[in-house]
Length: 58
Image (tube, rainbow, N blue to C red; front, side):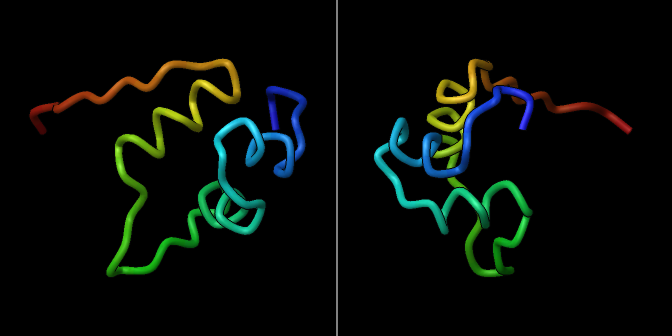
């Protein structure tokens, strides 16, 4: 991870659990549930980034 944090540290910063961070980082969400924008924003803040969402025309 580029922030130099363990998944446990990120989970603590987000108020989450380590397995949830592992799924988020590994892209292992299932077809029925994707991370929310709120979760992605918390993750970005925890690792020292900001969340940017763009809509782009093909």
